[in-house]
Length: 141
Image (tube, rainbow, N blue to C red; front, top):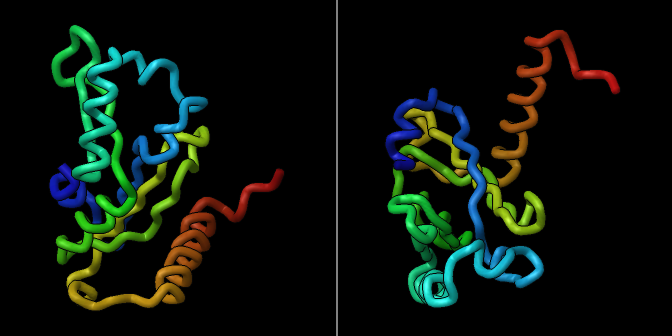
């Protein structure tokens, strides 16, 4: 799925998504295993611990359910993609229980190169400036 989404992304573009991660395991961040029965929720947690990713369908709903994904799983996935790089892995950023992952489709010349953190930060700041310049400037509050 990530390969397909990146295929629709322009070089230099970002794919940003949220996922349930480690903080979703904290009891205060969910109600009764996100409405899964106890056995299904235990299975999701066991898969997460063993594989870095766990999933179970909601009761009576095939193909729709709850997943948990370790940030390290995302990092390993993207490391194996020559046309992409991780730009952001943020734990519990949304609602204290959803992680945010940002993956950038690399330019052809960049593929295989390892950018420094400073290069990534400068690139993001430059893109933000260009974005707001195209829209008439930074919004005033």
